[in-house]
Length: 192
Ligand code: SF4
Image 1 (cartoon, protein in one colour):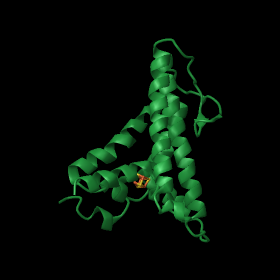
Image 2: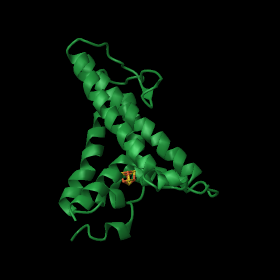
Image 3: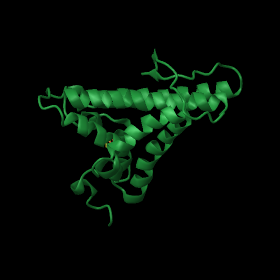
């Protein structure tokens, strides 16, 4: 099988450029942030096709980014037990699940005129920052701009967590608790 040795081959080099490009494209037009949907669905499509975590082993741009940052450090601390005992995995799965639910709910409420949009970056659902300067103005409806900012914020928040964990504990500490990796493991267990 074409991807049978994906784990052995490891990540394709320099995929982190895709992650950096994603955040840069937000300054061109925030609507590009909707590409997050591809990042969230492709891992599961590959999992369904190859019955293994091909995305995690070979193609994940975020893993490439955190690995690149992590390798710049050399004195990591011991990984706290909550990374490996399942506690943080559960917390993050709930956090991202609820985040997606809030995103869907607020977008629907804005589309129906029941809520004002939040056209700015907000970290960890709680820290409002600012709107990004836009090179292109596509003229999207408020709900789509809101949705784009929510995805951008979610991707930025989780990338920050991943990079910080990589620099403190180990290059791919984030992978031990990543909701996509966690869900992939659960699905694989379910089908074997
Ligand atoms: S666990 Fe998450 S961050 Fe790590 S490789 Fe898989 S999808 Fe990427």
